[in-house]
Amino acid sequence: MRLFAFARRAIFGAALLPAASLIYWASTGDLTANPIDFITDTTGTTALVLLMLTLTVTPLRRVTGQNQLIKLRRMLGLLAFFYACLHLSTWVVLDWFFDFESMIADVIDRPFITLGMTTFLLLLSLAVTSTAGMIRRLGRRWQQVHRLVYLAAMTAVIHFWWVVKADFREPRLWALALSVLFGFRLWWAYQLRRT
Image (cartoon, rainbow, N blue to C red; front, side, top):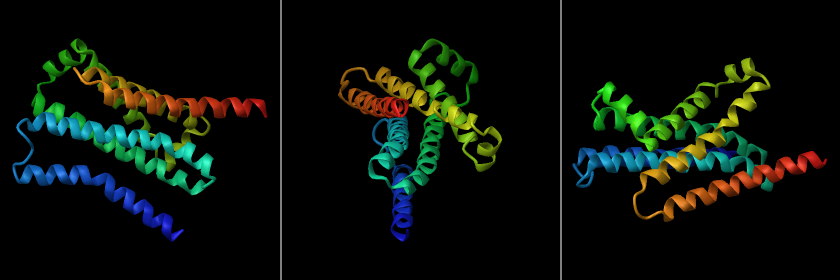
């Protein structure tokens, strides 16, 4: 139990390293030649990594039989949302400096921005309903709502794919990882129907 508590703290600390690094690099003026793009890429990639790790918890728990792993899911999901907030804030503050009219036009005109905003709204709905109080209020519906995490992951991967202009190797790897996670869920659902 102590080992799991230590591992949980270690994962939390590791997840905060990208944000801490950005703060450090900003304070030392070392955010590359294009700081806005660098911050956008770092926060977006970290959000995607954490979102995928969130989806990995349940398959890992079922394969290993370590039920305590489920305690990591909410923490990882909220950390993914935290980085999604930083990612969105970069766009709102640094890209557009609160020019809401231009932002609305950007969401409408550019499909990858539309998809990014959709992903954020899905993650927001998951974060808002992740508290113990909301779990009690929603009852059985809570599980149905939180299946939206798969849709959020799908829109996040497509958002990333559409942002990339030349080298598609990384988005392909994310798409493959998500396909494996979807496949595991479908296989598990099939096994449950057979029993």
